Length: 51
Image (tube, rainbow, N blue to C red; front, side):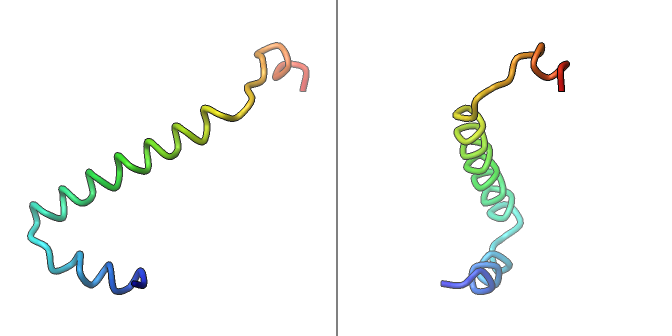
């Protein structure tokens, strides 16, 4: 299924269901970003000051 097909289907949802869809997608994106950035090595504040 293409992105355009998904958007077309999403536009057919009621306003309440669109909000629910956005909330669910936002939660998924937040979780993915948190997982991605939590695995990145962190620099110390001292290292950042030396750059």
